[in-house]
Length: 402
Image 1 (cartoon, rainbow, N blue to C red):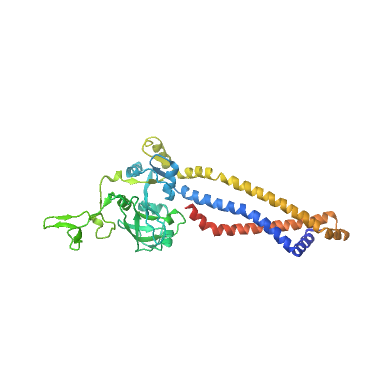
Image 2 (image 1 turned 60 degrees about the vertical axis):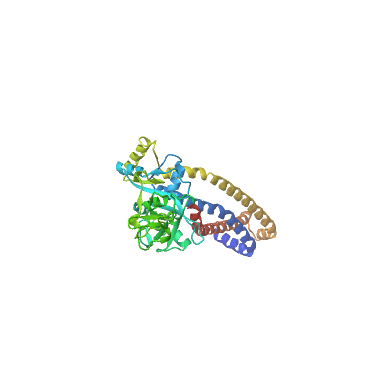
């Protein structure tokens, strides 16, 4: 019997016993679907995590946990490391090896429209160029107090240019600093499919104002000042009560009253992203921090940190593959049992085929062709279902990652 005849008879037999055939095919598809789907999702998870780390050459910060430093600078939502200062950015600039991009991530926004607050990232314009972030609507940062929001933030909180959003104080009883700032939303970033979609970006000086390092003062001599806050007013002087507090909103009218106390080189930053001009400059900068600056700060390669972290986390993947293998073995045994029972049930059919002149080899060929068709159909269905599950779960997985 040639292959064409065997295929025809096997197909007709499966159609006649279609209930049994569909059951076997679905069992195979379900068994294969799980490991294939897990593999696709794990590959995407690794790609999403590693992609951002690979795109970030170096991160400089205070001495301590390299993992905390890298994850905080990359994803904004890990444990905040000890702060470094702007003097490190100045040092990197002076070496000429790299472009320093300071980031200060110490605060979150207040809950808006029943959505929890998101990280406030204070940085410079170089960050947007480095991450290739573009505006979907509105305009970029212009003055202190301006902010641009990520696409997910704008969508979830129903925000748009012209709206306002408040920072959340770390300590409600700290009246000397850490005072809530009402920020003006001037733009919404286009989707970047990264943690940048879930953050609010401000100029780093605005972040320092939230820190309490910079502040403004009311003009008590203005005609429209609230008289309830004045204790005494003469032609020569004005005495105000304790109700006068630093501004919580920066506008075009009062922006000039804001100022900073102290040396800017001592102002805090969470981390500094260093973008070397070449691989040689990257090596030289790593060498500087391994020797001359080792006692003051550390320089890490985020790609290596994330790779080491994933090597630990993904050890659980072995358990998944073992469980999938055990499931496949059980399914194979059940399939063998079904096949044996099927042959027993079709004993009369086999005798008839033998009486018609079919050899034992021909009968085995027919049964094997049926099993091959069922296996191929089950595998095809599993692959289609796995790709569909991967497509449906991509955004959900990305939200879990970032």
